[in-house]
Amino acid sequence: MNNPVSRRGFLSMMAGGAALSILQPVMSLAQNQPARKKKMNVLFIAVDDLRPQLGCYGQKEIRSPNIDRLAAAGLLFERTYCQQAVCAPSRASILSGTRPDTTKIYDLNTPLRKVMPDIVTLPEHFKKNGYETVSIGKIYHHPKDDSQGWSTEPYRAGTFPEGPWKGRGYVTAEAIAQMEQNSKTNPGTGGLGPAFEAGDVPDNGYPDGANTDHAINELNRLKDKPFFLATGFYRPHLPFNAPKKYWDMYKREDIKLADNPFIPKNAPSYATTDWGELRNYYGIPKKGPCSDDLARQLIHGYCASVSYTDAMVGRLLDELDRLKLRENTVIILWGDHGWKLGEHAGWCKHTNFELDTHVPMILSVPGMKTAGQRTWALTEYVDIYPTLCEACGLAIPGHLEGVSMMPLLDDPGRQWKKAAFSQYPRGQIMGYTMRTKRFRYTEWQNKKTKEVMARELYDHDTDPKENVNAVDKPQYKQDVEQLALMLKQGWRATMP
Image (cartoon, rainbow, N blue to C red; front, side, top):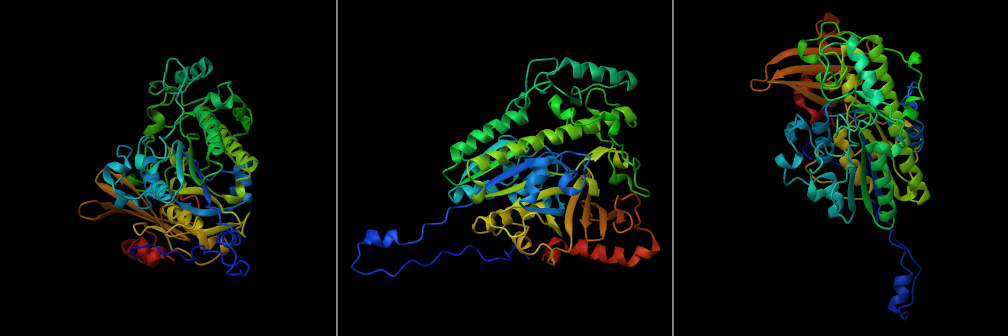
């Protein structure tokens, strides 16, 4: 299946109008034609490092009332997966509609347009169809990527103010002192600056609030024209910097640590990382685990950062309501990949585990009959591009490697994909992972020879936290054979 096929017909032209006398003036004929239906706008909300740890996903330890109310007005996707659990490749897949083995982007160093200069990206497709396309905050990993896709120059609020870590966005000496205290119990630390802080500043004292201010201004500017407004939030990406009032929403003593802070039994070395991204920050040990106290501080910062972003999402939704744009605006919210909070002896992303590849996604389309419902259908981020095209009545480009999810808005329980595919490189080894309804199956293959160097199998019926690699257990022999064949056949063979 080389080209995805929409499972729903495109919007039809409205017909009708009273019969007219041929003697009436031409102007009268025009007046009796039905008004042309407005184009659907798109509010495209990206959140960095957001795992599905939200109230609407049944995770009550994090306060997310605004994302929860978006879920109440849309369809929540319980089983959506990113194509690679790191920023640049994930976003390149979403915005190009193709998978990492097509983009050839596997790290943070390569802008999409450097390797795919002629591809019609998601914003470019909307721009070509008469939309004003606007990028605010972090949409592509590289700020200046895809200039032909945007109607205006992408906007990102700067990091501020002056200080010992100028340009990193830290604002208080208090946070620095706190991390210095941490370093006494975690010697040998240094790097990018504090991993978290709670500045007693207004929302726009940090970039996400300032970007939200700009997005609200843009909504007012664009309210009378079709728009594709992409707003990307940095938090809860490191460093966990959020205004103090969001930290105050949580009590440190109530924060629970991961109940599986160990590497999965029998997992190959390719499967795990030493979370170097976090270790680059001041106050974080260069080797070994975090102390329980530091782990609680980090989780506290993650929770505060999610609630901060949630409040900014609420401001966008409120402004859409105030401008009476909700009835004509498709909204999609997604997090570019998951994140570990001490599980599997790790932090950050960069693996093929469920925690890193499983992502939140909510889609709200005006007039949908399934508002407030959820679907367990297996979906992927390459499906976003064709879905937004169909939701807005645009043709679906032939190069896409996903399928429109619009049929799920009519029937969330319908038969759908048999698997979702992700991958992660380890030098000359590529880890290909496949999530089915029951299993996660992974092969670590030599990139040149395709030799399988290691395998993983996690049975989500009995081991939903992926604590035991069961690939060598005799009772799974037939399952492994079937999954290996399915992985070899590839994503096209599993499409609905």
